[in-house]
Length: 457
Ligand code: DOR
Image (cartoon, rainbow, N blue to C red; front, side, top):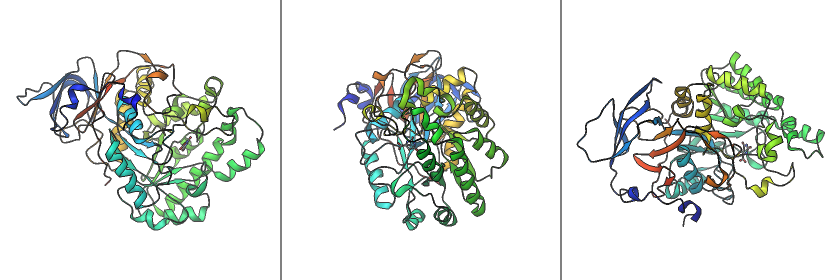
């Protein structure tokens, strides 16, 4: 059974009856962001799971659900390439159903999820278990990383389907921590698949934890896990990637120093991402939201915000991920350092970024590239990330004319809080379509829709 609080959103009644046979959807007179980045006012027709036509005006005799999209902007659905959805094992924080409801509401139509669940996702059996769970309960499309341990090199070479290998170089305990260079090197040296690193230097973190022991102000978190800790790990990952010409992705890059390093020296096989919170929040957030601002890698200074923005605009950083990492308010209410690190994000990421675009930080077309197209390209996800005939009908209609605050009581993530609570945002999803089916429409979810497993080529 699904949790009742999601159902009390009122299921989108008209659509449920259409589930057995996929109908065409005709979206009329939207401002469509085209693959070139240009905007065109026009129509989009879907059939079965795909986009079949994009044109200034489509005349069709096919029976279709018509959506009057005048005044709205149509974007490819967001692909969030770094989330922690907690199932199996930590479902008191989140599960694949609640998380995917939050995705649908946020305009996120696909996600790539991380292996630090219980059990850890470290072999074919645990990967298959997640895929099975997701096929039963996920409203959006899904893919799952495999986590590296000291023992599972053979699994890292063979498991499938996966977007890549996740390595925690720091900020993790237990089996997923790989903080010895020799072990890291053995992973980089074998195989070809993408390696995604959480780049923080564990030795430096441990040493600084001792130096700052006894301090309970959560702001100390950004000093313990400082810019240097991030830089050291990114330098090491880059060195190994260059030695073996190994496809490397740097997860949630957080510092000016790392951005400058990549600006100087970024091989063509290396990509990097940044989170909305590392762009929009900084250490001043500890004063207002305390431990809710605690995440790994930590929030940095306003200077880091600006350098990261510039690196993103210049293509030094390739795309956006939320690192959606929900913890309960009870867990976050403990005293630092007993509080867990992480914050939710899938429900607010698109609106946060589009609000930044409307404020002049970037263009809407850049947001589309960073949240859809560039992600599909980097992970080799076929048929996704742009609005064009033949591509999958994963779409989101957003309203860029009205502003609404982030309200805790409206959130669908099981943890039910957001670091952006109270922020007045525009670009909220009005309608989200996954595989040619309306999964979210004006505040209502169709919880019957199921996403599909992503493939990676
Ligand atoms: O703050 C974080 N929390 N960063 C991560 O990379 C992991 C995450 C979690 O799983 O809670």
